[in-house]
Image (cartoon, rainbow, N blue to C red; front, side, top):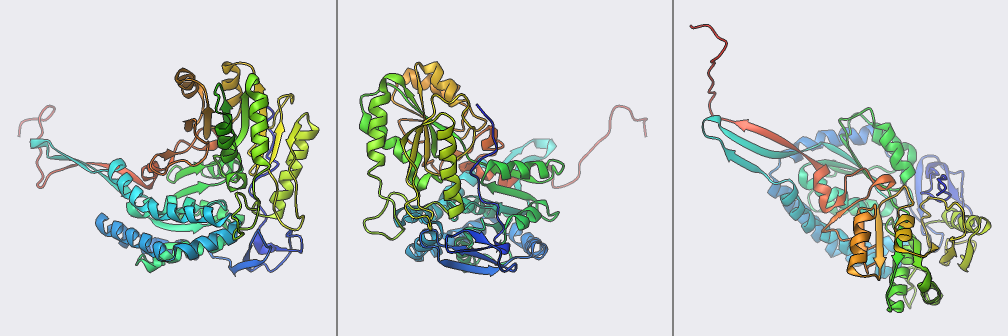
Length: 499
């Protein structure tokens, strides 16, 4: 497989040096403010001055000791109040998410539900993953195991789930006793600001949970800052690897990276072709393909190819694409911006010009807005398939003859986040599960839609073995072993002269 630099990645353009023209492209603008726009309309949604990294970190360091000293029960009570604050404005929060990301309202509502549900999941996870232990050793005193927070944690969030994914770091980090600085994607700062407002309304100090508005430069400064004790990142592999390299000589910082995937979905023996097609479309095109767990590669057994591809093409052509508040509700909204839409269409053309055969062409219905239709392309004949995460609704199809070939093709990637087998026998799934390199392995389920009650993470270019979701507690606190006695007690023996 050809290892190229991604033709599509999270945009790196610094908005403080840009604004958008009539087509939505970013051009030079005010260098003092960060601006976000609604993908579905191109209208300005939010603007604010850029944050100061040094001042933000200094405030967090001053606020952290008092929070860390609070009893765990008090911290849990306050994050539960946060969940109640979100509940009070569920619909308004969902509307803001829909406007700033372009995702349909039905999907924005599910994101808000995930934000609320994260609290109780994190409470359970903290008790299970970082529980306290005490063992009485008689004359040797007591052996104890407890956990401490790291300190000030930098959370770098993505634009596809601008509330849920940062919140998945923030809640467990707060429960553990850390202070938080959230540097959101420059494309979705309004959602981040509203998210932190709910924490403040719940009684969690504003200096303890702060927003750092900014672009890539502010992110780089925050990651490298000597006052930051941990970096919790969700985003592209390119940025995650850069963070990892930057901090390679700083072992004192905890680093958790969730970096996406080039995820395979393998279709094997099954008569339920309509169900197979539905699972494929859900995996590849939910959130306009802007999920790190989205299926990027469809690997199909040769004797099922015609039926499966015919059903997938038919279902894809029925997808409603539209703005967040359209009625009827669309299945897909736009991608995040015009630059991303252009990069996607260019990537589809690249695959076409290098041996791919179109099944469903990717189109731009309106060049001024970032709506794209799903693109499906057979890349079986390509001698080298680019191993990149095309972060949008592009599905590459590969036809195979036997199960060993299917597994080999599925593993033909540097990434290792999610993989699904659709169809096949229990024996097939056992082989698939045992041999697939991925942190999430499903059977007859989509590649996306992972549970927050389970660990979430991958290997290779997908992560650094610090899974999030239920296992986030592991990187939010560190274990401390103690031996303790109420009074000093010691004696000396061998190797001493008589006194």
